[in-house]
Image (cartoon, rainbow, N blue to C red; front, side):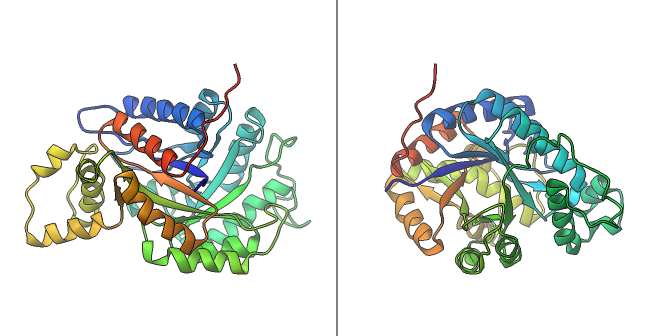
Length: 342
């Protein structure tokens, strides 16, 4: 079946390589996705994570957009509690002015890091309160529309440049909170299946059922984000998946690691019985296999969530294997390659 595919990229730093190479790999993958017919390319925000080079999505959005021609480029996402709403509005209006109708603003409410790093980013214990997210989002929209109330202290503050609109806003989430907020405010919604797969169907169903049309979106648009690794055979894909599985496992097991380990390096890691069980439970979050195998898992999930679009995160050690995985997925979902201008 023909179905829109997009990419979520954290710019993984692999063992034995560098962050510069990780970022160059991102640009290479983005050029491929642009030509292969992918719909969007979103960059993540993570901090104090040695295996991830994607810390400032707004900078990378500009680089990726400059290297591509048609694909939409956005944040997956900007962690709003880490940033002043005015600064976010300015950054994304600037990007929209440079790349008209090609920028997306994905917003998240998680810190994208640990509590100490979040404090270093926000410089205030009071700012660590995630309960302020709805107010911060409302402030961002007010800067977007220049519609603060008359007596608001920011009434005279404007987000420049003012002759462009803020790009479409998407709320990112892994629970029902962002789903409900996105539906109430009439925004786009993207659910992280790889973080909380059990909540995907109820969250996306609730978003669609409760959606209220707005000036931002006339109708609901739900993106399902999932971790998928595809290879020519199930065995090859399972081997490739060891890298990302160990990365997620290490977070739960308290095993600090540097870059994304190779499959052979993961196999060499000692594990006790409990750790092996934990490793297998983490592996279950990822959709892995040959084209036929991943298709059999993804199609029912798309149907159950009524997703309008599938956004794929693929973290493997070998860059060419990652590109090949996205190419195989494009074949599975019959994505037509883009006709690029000369």
